[in-house]
Image (cartoon, rainbow, N blue to C red; front, side, top):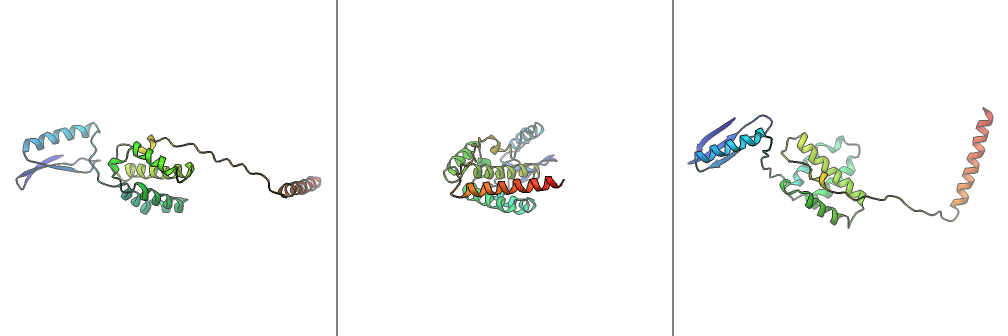
Length: 187
């Protein structure tokens, strides 16, 4: 539902619709206000209207930290990842968070941490944005994290046995073989 009212010699147009937060804008003429209402309502019907949010990434992450991590199994590590994200990209407005900015964050962060750590951080950021869209009703077009390529990580380790370890392993294997024969001998 739209309304226009005169305030201080200017015209304030306001639109309220179920499922959307109310939006308003002030114009110099009543005709301009009517045109804006018509265009905005058309966009609302097509589901193409997204009001501007001046929320920063840091504010969104703080709200996530306050509401969500205590329910998670790995809440401590989630909070640490949230703090890292706030430190590096927290001051950025949500409207400016793009895949290109996240890619430059990825490239810079890979100089400091391993790719698996970065993947976990971006997973937390993706969860923050998804919760903001779905649960909190914050109008964000899409999740930009989903459009960023994550590096593959190779977590394999090559370890050589140290002096004396081979003998200990063989002794354990012999002892295990003896115990197994004793147990199966009883059956």
